[in-house]
Structure formats: structure tokens, C-alpha cells
Length: 306
Image (cartoon, rainbow, N blue to C red):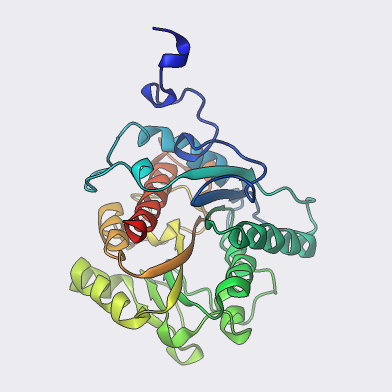
């Protein structure tokens, strides 16, 4: 047997440069792929502990732990049997230039989307979702938002670049329709009268269970094109300690994964996983949870193509 006969995924961490070992491409527009992964190492919008700029690298590294499964449980087929993925590496931008960063991310995301690929982005803090929504809106029009988080991020008192203000700004700009959008796992202070998003708070999800949560999301979103954003602090700190704003009382990783799987059938056109801060992680728990959520998101895209 020669080296060329050995698949990279035989050894979990051999040549693990892209997420799940996806081939790297600095030219995602010209690459043959269904899905493109983009890292966004930005954390200048944080209000808590900084460090999510290292999130994309941590998620890619942790993906080695789930790379070996040919068919990810409980799915019955290999992901690569249905979709081709590429990893575009990380967005490059000048440190400290927040307006320049916003323009660079929106431009890069738009290029990828207009090439016919679905975009999966890794943060970075949650502010990155706002320029990503602008890019997706430019291609798909007004979207439904499916938002997993401990916080509503609808706070009007923050700055334009705060990671807690995106979902105050996005409806105001017509990027998302809060009337068909839903927030899952919320467990911090918010004023229900300040926004029109449906909120399935953490207690509601725990008390009603996975099936009821999936049904409520499906009823709310309907047939609208949707953007799926997953802030890792939706999970309880027992399952995801490595984040800047941990909040006790969150979802377990198992419950969150079941809910994400339950979204198959919805028309999800864009996705991100954000707020992984590996400096506060323990045994890669948070990065592994994020990588697994991301893989489930990719299976949702595979289901659309089957």
C-alpha cells in the first residue's frame, strides 16, 4: 500500500485543514461544490469575554472527532454521498476596522452565494450574522430567522456593531420578517413588547420537549426561506463552557441536536455557528458541540438534495 492509497480520514487529524477535511479553496466561486464553509475570526462586538476570533480554528480542529463516521448517526447515509463541500478558509480583514470588516464579509458572502453555493459560516462573535444576513437578503430577499441563543440580541441600546443588537437592526432593515421567525433557548431578560419574534425560551423547550419545539418552529417558519443561526451559548455551560457569555439553565447538546435535525424539510438557505471561545473551553467540549451542530446543519442541506 502506498501513501496515495490511504484516505486522510483514516487518521482523524491528518491533514485536517478544512472543516471535516473538506478541501481548501481560496476560489470558492470557481470551485465545484454545493456548500462552502467560511471562517470569520472577528470578536470586536463582544460585551463579555473576548476570544471568539479563535472559534473557527477550534471548530475545524474539533471536527476531526466526528470525521471518521461514514454515515453520521442517526443519519443513514454518508454526507459526501449527497453534497460536496469546500472550506474557503477565513475572511481576511484589517484589525480594528469594523466598517471595513462589515463590507468585506458582506462582499465575500455575496460572491459565494451568487456562485450557487450554500454558505456555512463559523464565528467569531454573533455580530457576524448581520452582514451575513445582508448578503443572503441580497440573493434571496426577506428571510425567516431561526435563532438558537441564550439572548434575544434585540437590544436597541447597544452600538451598531454590538453582538447584542443584530436582531434589532435586521428587522428594521427588512432583512428578516420577525412574524415568521423564532428564537429558541432564550433565558435572559428581554421585553416581549420590544420585538415581534416568537420566543421559545429555555424553560418552554425543557417543559414541552423536542417534538413540540420542532413543530412550533415549523409552524412559524412555514415555507419561507430561512437563515439558521446557532449561538453556542444556547447550550448550558455544562455542555459548552467555552463562550464569552455563558448562562446557566440552557439546552443540553442532545436536545439541541435533536431540534436541529428536526428542521429537515424547512427551506434553510444560510447557516452559522458562533460564539465559540476556546480559551475558556474544557477538553474541547464547546468546539466539539459546535462542530457537531455544524455537521447536522450540513445534513439538513443534504436532505434538501435527496
